[in-house]
Length: 333
Ligand code: TRP
Image 1 (cartoon, rainbow, N blue to C red):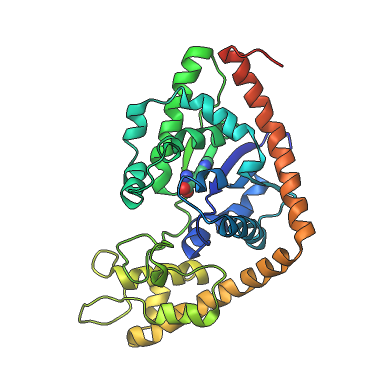
Image 2 (image 1 turned 90 degrees about the vertical axis):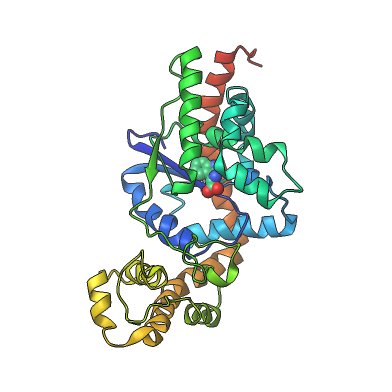
């Protein structure tokens, strides 16, 4: 895939099942990009083991994530879809970049601080140097843009610092990547605590993409709405974060505007609104779930997709890695 299109790259860790936030905020928008960009999307399994994983679950989630990417419209012919650990160059460049990343920089990463608090019994070296590996993921493919959520911006900034430092010593080796805010995607909040981003760590407030319709319906029925007295469906993110989050979800799923939604539920209160959002999400996810299950059952196909993807990715990654090895003074074998 060598064209003069611009390049994009992004990854998601298979450390939890994909949820509505991943879909509406990211994956939904990935499919349509392949016309204009060379796109690389991967399952960040090397990153996932910075937190202890059950091996069987990690395997299942990695393959399910790949099948879901495809079910969400990412055509493996038009996008390079691969599993991070299949492309050894990630770990190799990650090591090199570790030596160009400062202890102080890594210490300032808010994700490291958060995860250290949550995993106080396993604050390992990988968790600390996670951003150097992420920089390697990015720089191997010389992308123009890295579409990620706001929580990853600091890591992309660090990657840019590494580029500056490395290129400052060795010349123009890496292309400077830009953070690409996924603002066209909806920011989906937790259904039970709408102040927080939707996350697998609060499962009752999180709608998983492959979840059963009855479970989705239950979660929406129990979604917290706001304790104001007017009790009407009105978009006001500050005053009414719960209702506004449901409206965001409904808008993202149906394409309706906030005005249209307010009119649709005028005079009906939350009792009618919450199940309606649930129904819309159930219908959105039904074909994704069915298609994911169909693809997962076809092991040979899935294997051919990740093998092809790894081959294409390695080809590009190896070119960058060779250049880097040469620049830093390693003897070619
Ligand atoms: N750190 C990202 C996350 O937790 C996942 C990731 C790993 C990634 N490597 C990447 C994202 C490279 C974009 C580019 O969401």
